Image (cartoon, rainbow, N blue to C red):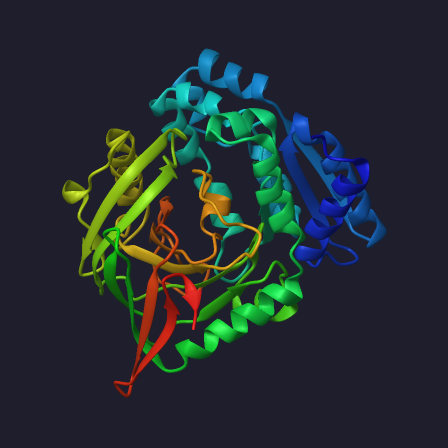
Length: 386
């Protein structure tokens, strides 16, 4: 199955619409060489709106050579010319850069960590609380990616392209329905029969609906980022409150992209108990990522929040029904909940960190909201909205 020119153009149009690109906007369009046609179509759509785009392209070959041939010390500084480009831009549209994400599993961790640290000045510009940029991160299906996830390519295409095509109006309607249960919410209790059972406190925190459209109001309140596919309701819980356990069947190490399977997490007073985490596969990669980010954060941010609860999200994209180890789409699976640890200051929280890792439950969770008056409201039973 090959994506048609028409389908690629439709996706490009959707991405530009998601960002609410306006006349006069400077737009950076970034992606891998395998997405060249899509990047060009995005740029053309920007031009049609009176915006001025710049395309930045990388490739698997280039990425491999960087991490194989370049010394770590040369990867510790972000290119000043790219920082200047981002500073001047109003909108950043990024499409999945790697054709074959499995190549990242062989990149040396010390070089990945150096590159991550080098990106901090860029993150400060993009995610600045008052002057941040409008941004989009979009998935894109490839045969190599499907192989690395262990699924047929048509399924990956259906998840990403089908999930992207769900209208914003439909996602907003479902999001508003779910949001009603959070009126005057204080505690949220989530549990299933696979090992998830936790509570987080959300009193006074902003509720965000990921409908795949960054409205002017979203931008004004600081909700400037978007993903495609979209489809989640999310909130930044109180960072030093909440406790319990979560079982995540499959995820990806946020540094090395290694598959991490069968993860059991426990947190107390809002903080992940790293020495209590277990996993069926690649536990070491998970632990290393948290420790590496914690080391960077210790020199960069106060208070230290690398391991503190950062997000409670509820997936509800009707076209995404299976987790495959691709966090961008896994967190949108209907009937799942995810908890992230690390940064959350861009959507209503108080934590800054180089870490943000979403751990997604299996489908079929139960969700109950305790309101400030002590009354309970059931939102979901075994993955189905009540």
